[in-house]
Amino acid sequence: MFDKGRHHRAKIGFVLLATEQTIEDDMFRLCPDGVGVHFSRAWIGDSITVESLSQHAGDLARAASNLLPDGSLDVVCYGCTSGSLVIGEDRVAAELNKGAPNAKPTSLITAVIEALRAVRATRVAVATPYLDEIYTQEVQYLEKAGFQVTQIKGLQLEKDSDMIRASPEYLAEFARQADTPDSDALFISCGALRSLEISGRLEEELGKPVICSNQAMMWHVLRLAGIQDRIEGYGQLLAEH
Image 1 (cartoon, rainbow, N blue to C red):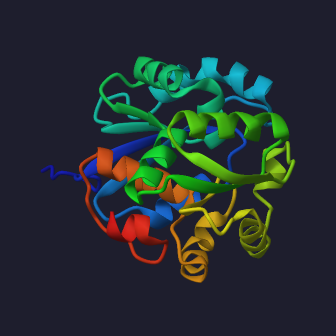
Image 2 (image 1 turned 120 degrees about the vertical axis):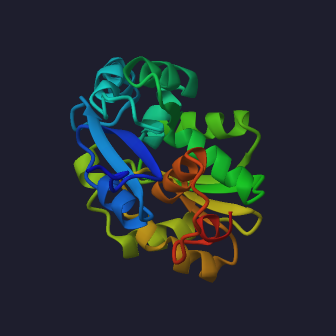
């Protein structure tokens, strides 16, 4: 009567911001056959600041608890770059573990750090949509993780509803401006940005790895779940590592 179901290879859960409008599409685009992606949302208003992100940390456990309560989830990831660096990886993991105790907990900033290490980057240029108060913390977080930030540029956007409307062509030009000749890799930060659409061709143009948040996140959660599939078209991270 029963078989293993559609998601017999792995089940991955994502806790997103209540305002998020890009990540789900990107995860479905990248998801291999036999892997399930499941989503829940933690409350936050349409304002991405250090204060709002810190306050919404308290809703992560509740949101995680709504993901496959049968306990079959393999990995649970908090899908917000700025939120995970403001809240911190340890706090995020602890909150996710409360809600989904059987799943491996992780976060988007963890995915980015692991992705940069995978492509052997040590000097990183960063393009972000964030306010100064957030990207200043991002520089500190990356440097604490062992990277040298050669340059960071921010769009000074506060609203998630604005970040999701930045066009891919504009993001490509903005990312070129953020890059520096001495960087080993370019990181386009934020899951709300439609940077997945430009990552592959921008990497070919610049001749160096281009890591964007959603590309790094899918690569990271797949590897945590034991899925080694290579995915073409979005840069060397997913195609080669």
